[in-house]
Image (cartoon, rainbow, N blue to C red; front, side, top):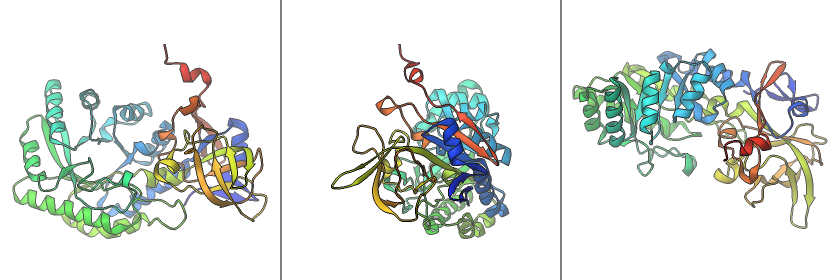
Length: 412
C-alpha cells in the first residue's frame, strides 16, 4: 500500500495535491509519504510478531532525518554502514543504543565514534576487521559487541550489483570458517560475541533463497552451540522487494511464513534490517517537462530531473513507473524520458508507453523513496533536489534545494 493516489484526475501525495507541492517548492522534488513509510514498517512488525524482532531500518536506503525520526517514533531501531549515518541518527534525536553497524570497510575512526556513542553492536565481516575492532575497543577500555556476518553462498536471484550472499561477493565470512572465527571472538577480552548475521541481497522477490539462507545460518548456530559457544542473536538481514512494475514483490507475511517456524524453534533473539521495503514506495520524484522533442527515430520527453537526481535506471537498468501528474488522456504513446545532463546515459525511461505530455507539464516518477536521493550527485554542477514530507493534509520541506552557492561552499 502507498498513499500516492489519483483523485479527480490528478495525483495526490497523502491528502495534498502533487501540483500544489511542485508549485510551492519547485522541481525536481522528492516527496515522501510519512504514512506509507510507517505503514510498511508496521507490516514487518506484524508479520514477524511471533519472534518480536529488533527491526533495524536500513538507513542507507533513505537517510533523511525526518524519516529516521518518524520511524524511530514508530519503534524502529537502525542499521548503518557509516559513521555519517550514525551522526544522522543522533541528529534525528534517536539513541545509539538501538544501532547495528554493518559494512565491510569500517575505519578505526568510525569504530571509535560508534563505541564512544554506545551503539548496540557491530556486524563484523572479516578477521582483519575483528583485529582492528579489538584494538580500538581495548584502547578505549570498552567491550565491542559483535555478530559475525556469514556468507551463506545463496543466490538471491536479484540484480548482480545488489546480490551480497554469494561466495564471490565481498561480504561476510565463509560458513565453513565461521565457527573458528566465532571461537576467536568469544575468547577476546575486548569483544563480546552475540551471534551471527546474514544478508543475501536487496530487492528479493522470491521467498526460497531467503528461507535457504536462514536455514543455513541456523544450521551453523546448531554446530557452534554443540561445540560449546553461547549464541544469543541471529540477524536475518532484510532486502525484501517492492513493487516497481506492479506484480513482482511478495508480502512481508510470505517471508515470515517461510522462516518463522524455524526461528521460533531456535529460541534466538532476532534482528532484521529492512530498508527498501519500508521507504521504496513511500516516495515519488516530481519533475517538470522542459521540452518535448520529436525526431524521425523517437519522441523525447526532456524533463528537469536527470541521472544526477535518479541514477537507478542507468546504473541498474531499474524500472520506475512514470505518469503525468494530471493526465490529459488515457491514450499512450512511446517515448524516452530523459534529463538535461550531457550524457547519453541520462535517461529515466526508454521506449516507455505513457500518456502524452507537453512543455510545462508535471510528471511523477514512482517508487523513488529508496536508493534514489541518497545516490544523487552534483554531476554537471547541478544542485541536488529538495526533499518534502507529506503528512496527512500538510507537507513540509525537510531538505532545501541546493543553490549555486552550495555547489562551491566547501571549495577554497
